[in-house]
Amino acid sequence: MEVADAVFLGIVQGLTEFLPVSSSGHLEIAKAILGDTSVPEESLMITVVLHFATALSTLVVFRKDVTEIFRGLFSFKWNDEFKFSLKIILSMIPAAVVGVLFEEELEAFFGGALTFVGFMLLITALLLWLADKAISTGKPVSYKDAFVIGVAQAIAILPGISRSGATISTSVLLGNDKAKAARFSFLMVVPLIFGKIAKDLLSGDLTDTTIEVTPLLAGFVAAFIAGYAACKWMVELVRKSKLSYFAIYCFIVGVIAITYEYAFA
Image 1 (spheres, rainbow, N blue to C red):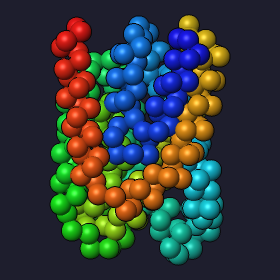
Image 2 (cartoon, rainbow, N blue to C red):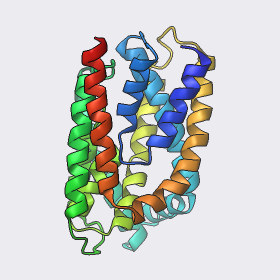
Image 3 (cartoon, rainbow, N blue to C red):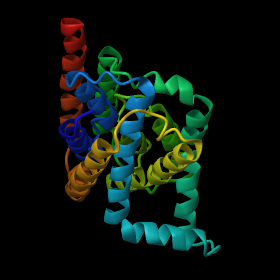
């Protein structure tokens, strides 16, 4: 992979991570257009590295919230911070279980199958459209909600299903406040990403490949910078904008992805 390609993928990842449009789906589309011929393991590795960069940018943007979560978790007092920390942990369980038990099966989806990605984007569009029609009650995320949102996050491991779109839509459909739903959605994924990176480092998955280090670093830096800028801007956009706009976008991109593979297969 060339440095310019890695930078392009990093920018795509950074800009799409915080919008409900499926960053993984966009990465698969971008890799197909760029003619990425890497095996699924290598393709998954660049995807994980770029997700790591945007996770780091999330920590920087939400540093005060993250500090409160850790403070609440280790205070061992039944306060709001401790309760929120438990909800974050609860939301992680479904995706962690799916990631551990079905890791090899999931890797096969990260090989540029645009038809599959396209149909998953259509599902994302439907979720966003339904959420746009839902009435928000303004209630905070409950423990039950946290687990259900976690299940949505587990499903969103599939490329084309937007993680933020699935989790925010699920939260809104459950009647939660959009601002609280967005904040919870962006924070709940960070521990999972860092956990995945730690697992891959310990197992050697990130080094057992022929991909060069320079493109990975270039992609990482590009994803971090783009992610930081996008997060600052997009969080406010998600809070105030209608999800139907993103539903239309996902529908269009999904149709384009399906058409592209059939036209150039």
